[in-house]
Image: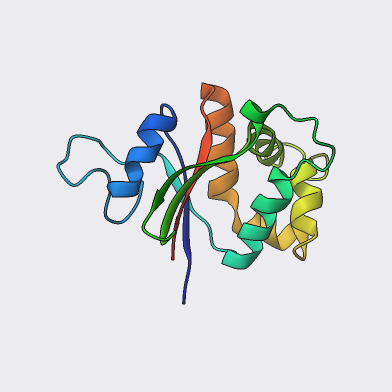
Length: 147
């Protein structure tokens, strides 16, 4: 079994949730051509490591993060074969920080738990650029996951 993860930005949760119905994900656009592909990043590093990173970044062990700021699954197809998840703004911002200062970010700590930070950062430049752009535009960062 393989897992495909595509990170993307969309205007809002409603638009991002519609991607659940697009064959192939956010980087292909809607089948009827009414919506162009969203800015996307397909990462090269291990899928299970990515899921671990998301879970680590989304964790709130203190219970102090407002619910609106937590990551959230916004669309689910079937028994979870396809999922659209909005990453928390903190995860987006920490990931964007890797662009300018790889060691200053909470994302760096979370990613380093998965292995060699330099290797992961080297394999994830498109994702980092996407997070920077999402942050600049005030948009959320989403993950389309297909099993």
